Length: 426
Image (spheres, one colour):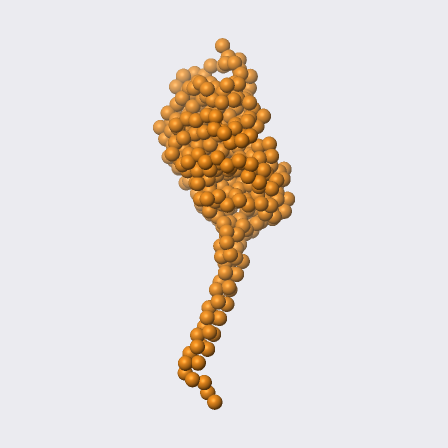
């Protein structure tokens, strides 16, 4: 005996719902397992290297430099202050910023802070200029128009300055006078700030490759295709180099040969992965980074296993700063938080208002952070109390040396004394 048409319709509907549910599970599974293909890249399609035939910088020094009797200061060679990208100088006690020693209008935006060594500051500007300044006076030493936009810090290597650009180039200039030594062009944009270790320059590109380049000649030693867009800057510790990608992955490779040691894809939810703009910083035991969706992630540096996470209330683009067993991260929700590095426990949480896009800077027992609303705050690392404020800012606050602060407030670069800065030379 056959059933009624209504029963058949009900049965058919149930079957359809079951199939849809199974299909949804399958789609979710495929999305979670559909990771980009990654591999060592030996073809290097679209990569070219140009040797220098240069005649010099466009603009030279305004006035001759004068020698001083000041002792040499600790260098800040790359974005983050060291190859681990820790963005900190915990052993320098400058105290609160006090007097402005000099200021210089740059005529363009400084999205990333300068680098420093041997009495000179080096700045890459948004619309293509690279500038060398005397750190004592702020006077121009040389200026170079590189053509492409910059959203990175130059890397200092011996007598060279290595600069990345959105036009897909990485170029080495002489630190002395800005002459071009070599240039490499890659298929994607290069927002990644270079880092140099053992005569090798490392950087990532938006076409997904992580490059290792001979820092003296610009030739490629190896390249690894992560399969995901890279805007982050690589961090180096020991023989490991690690990079985060827009595809939700963090990779660690052997920096000597580009062999993959591990990769970790971080889930955002049951149906998608996180996406990383922020670089990963490391204390050697763990890597710390921030997803664009505002998840702070700590991973084991040895295995890539996720150790702890914390979800902020809004987007996150800032590389975590690391100092003395603590991790400092700001987000679009206007909070600056201090975490215990080992387990992610929140030690303090300070609401500053506004939007925090860039990394904090730790100097001694102070942590500095800027908001896009153009405020910069100095907070005590112990409890997050605000002890200094200036109504300028925008991106990363800047850097610090043994003697002073250099704050990069959008279009103006400042040199500040601290309460505890050593006496100025006569």
